[in-house]
Length: 216
Image 1: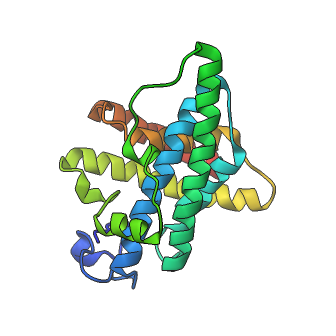
Image 2: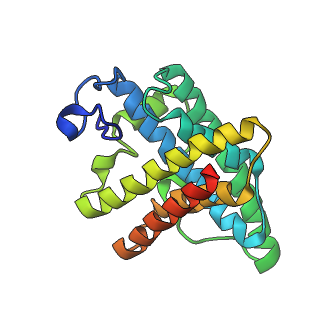
């Protein structure tokens, strides 16, 4: 595991042992990383679907609630994250199918451009999920460049803060399509290898602005 999202983190660097300072196990930490990676997979298709004015509110709220589940001390239940990963794959495929059909209807041909692995990975069983999580997929140390890693971490932790406000607002029957669509836009950007550091910096600023809007 490697987790550096809270003030409890070991030596203010990051927890990388069998258990974090918060009590989160390495297994749960890795499952959380994989789950967020799967949320990015939903977001890849969800952001593309926006081009056709397609919006899946269930997917948007699932992403929001999923991010909220990974904040510090929120949920250390390994079984819960295994189930969330399974559900994320089902939602991703539904959003993907909607986009692919809309694309074909408009263009008269199938969508053939490449997408990140998180947008297509399909586990056969729980063993596949556990193996993928244990491999470190979705973890921060996959990003070698420290500046890029820091920018992407700042964006993701900003999105987690947004998700907390949005989740509570949703419970009192208030939601905003713009906010959920931004979550997808930003998460998709985190797996877009074409994004420059300058573009990521701009997204950090935009994330802050959207965070204020969500809080309001």
